[in-house]
Length: 69
Image 1: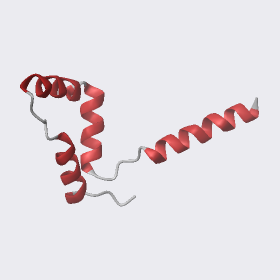
Image 2: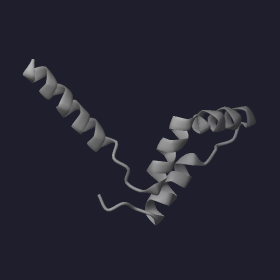
Image 3: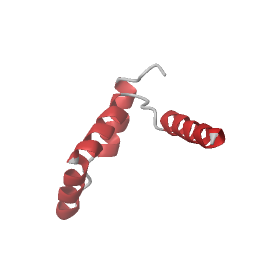
């Protein structure tokens, strides 16, 4: 059973490391996804046939406000 717990712990650590925010843009993206705002924005952008600009905004915020990981 110990190896199962070890495997789960390793998975969690790898997941957390892989999904670590590089800057403010990543944090904002995670919050908007968790709250459902991202889904609404994507739906509206698709209906209007326009890009929401989320990726560019995320990159810009990451460059302007990076985290020292």
